[in-house]
Length: 312
Length: 253
Picture 1 (cartoon, chains in turn purple, green):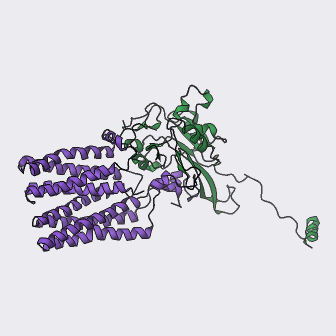
Picture 2 (cartoon, one colour; picture 1 turned 90 degrees about the vertical axis):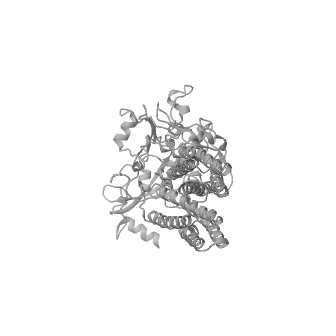
Picture 3 (cartoon, helix red, strand yellow; picture 1 turned 180 degrees about the vertical axis):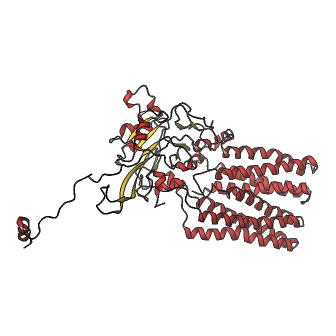
């Protein structure tokens, strides 16, 4: 599948933003993060900026962004519509949470409840995002049991890495650091398993089934067009195998291995060193997740490409 | 509404005969010609006479080579083994009974008509998110980058109900233009209709039935060739003696 930059930025940025929003809400409820107004400003400001920037970016690939409001209407059948509804609804408790904590300095039970509702909204929104992909039977690399756990875990993971960096500025919160480390390790293991599953999965359907010609190898000998067309550009996108291998290595090193090491350093060190390590972990995780998300699209093979086999 | 009705009354669609299709592309060009002025107009072309022409088409005809058994009962050589055949394959929207392209649409722009099962796009509602094209296993939808909306086969909804046309012309443009009668139009929801009987008689198939889209359009597979089809193999002439051997000797001097 063609990797659209706006969708890659949207899913990584808003994923991290929702992860940070959810963990901040849960962290405040459990007393794991300081109830400091400045902490709330930085954590929630960062979370809502990432979420909003991601959502705005997601409209950039639309042919008619001015009609985007129509996308809230078909939530009965469409995961994309549900994502739109969930993302907007999540702003309500998130706004109460942020305004109550940061503007009015309240961290009482009502504000904590708003924070937990914002966490729930964030969870639901990322879930709906994942289901847009997981529900597409046309793309076996997406329509499997890994897609939703990967989206949820990587959102929580990137949010935890960000929260650890914010916490480091306030003297560090060991529990937050350990949660980030655990989520990095879990995300690493899950993503490796998802890649392995994609490498070993048998194709669900053959060119013989796609053309109705049945048994006997079917080979395209003449395309219906002399240049590329929409189907080939959008659905026939292929990444060279050797490049995919290198990019996977870059993805797991940047997204998981380096941030894990840096988060552990931030736990061990104190003061400026901890802040530097925790911040660097955010940069690496962000870069690594962009590569991971690019591969999520580029390595996905749509069944419509069967009509162009073996060339595509 | 992108929700689907339990069942549409009629199921209008195409039956495409892979046995008779000669790959002439007449259906492709007549589709383009009609529809660039029709319901989903325009069918934008970008750089049509340049280096990298691109554009929107509802109907594309591929050509495939398929490995097939040879031997007795076929006309592909006398020995048994593997040979091949060439098949021309028109590809367009199948107006599925379970169109995921419709249910994934966030705006309601994509819809399936309850009256006849035709799947259409309302260009005024489409936001151009392209998700419907991702949901289609058949690559039937093509995005118009100029207009910013998704486009697809309308089954010539503006021909088949068009009172301004003579009754014989109220069929999709691709069907009207096919010179070999490889394309048939009718109600596949009615078991007694000519198209349904044709599908039953010829063993018509669904494309990728395992994906569960329940396409309405059917494809008729190529017929088995008969051993007596075509001319008998030539016998070697000449030999040691006789007239032809004499001619051969004379000419070989």
